[in-house]
Length: 311
Image (cartoon, rainbow, N blue to C red; front, side, top):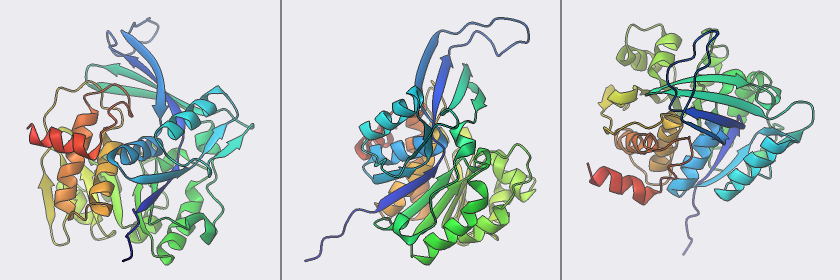
């Protein structure tokens, strides 16, 4: 009898710390000091948060990225190791410092200020077949701040697909709204994760539903995250709305990345069809909003099932 090995996911992209300023008395005001109630330094970056959420659910994960030879770089490597994520492919540099994002949390809103550092310096892995050996899926995240990596993503996706791996991308917001390279990436993706604003901007559609429909003409399976309303999924023939799970929101940091991880886990590990996987992903995202920081929830598969059962 041949035992089926657990699918392994390779996460490629940004690695940085998040500085969390919680319970702000107001939004930032020019020339005025604003106080907050809590302060912490935690693991950040879209790719990292997605990898940690995927590993917490029970999946096998490794990560490729770049950190500085500094205190924050060591902090991130220790944190990834604590989650059981393989970091032997993470690169180190002395040219720039590890990236930092300051999160200013006021009620249910979050304002971010980022020092790119290693995020922009990262140029991606060497494009060799050996990099992908032992993996079943490749996920790229937060690519529009990764100015060194972005031009190489097309070749990376082509190589991964040629080797029989499934692929996914969560681009995050492009401040220019030009969405450079997106036309090259979308045909190479198994799943595209975008939020409502990103979907509308990329597709030039008047609504999230129409955006999902238009994206489905250009990529295999777009998933549009619509926040409190849940998500829109292309099920192969039409757009399907999958409702969210209501919770009292503490912090939305990492909710979208938890959705990505939940969907990938439900699909790769549990074999769920898109709408069912999106329902599970919505629950993982909702549960993450009950904790401060992007990795604090540490939701296992059983945690998410209990959360769903309790509602």
